[in-house]
Length: 277
Image (cartoon, rainbow, N blue to C red; front, side, top):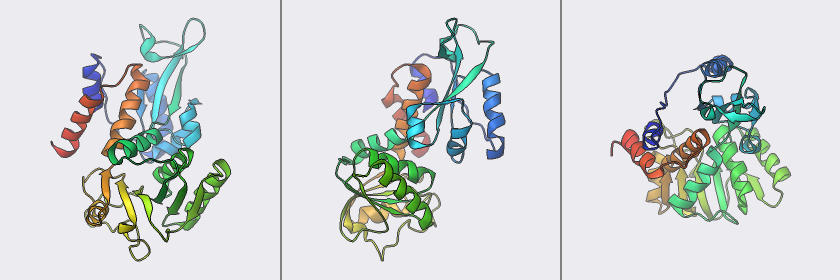
């Protein structure tokens, strides 16, 4: 996806994947600085760890408490921090890591475009309160959902997220546990579904999927998880996390390049890579 976007923009850049153990993330970031990388993405579990390792945080990272995109910057002749792409030659002075979060906006954009969910005032059941779930919960609250029900295997974690929402967005009615009635959206923010033998991420004895109008699964590979198929069978409009993956990537590309991302080129490349179509 990113290499297709770079090629469409005519940039002689390359996007590469590196396996980095969590305990070596600090050293990996220092190495990227030393090699004058223009930027990078971080995936689980690095998003939370990087929050305390970058040199400065964009408002998006401060708001959602996680970093999934880094842009490397250096000071120009006037002492202002600028993206490394703006320098004619690799700078010899200090380089800083500027952390961003593109996940939160990508999720709600995908909900709007792929499911036509109108979030202000909506009722939502969110499954999972870990890293991805917490970011999703905070973003949904910030976008003005009316009711937010949080379900997590570790109840204390869901309660902590609920307490944070009550403090930051008191207008949102947030509760821990399953709703009794219907909801506009049920959203899976757990990793259940990555393996074909995974259990459903919810207890059908406490909540029937027919109670939800729409269902969104952050898992995108496989394209149809057990949760996705069960929701569709129950009559829900369904979408998976491919849209979220696309939009967090296009936003990251714009942060690095300063140019509008070629969204459709990147969408095509992503679908070909993930699904072979």
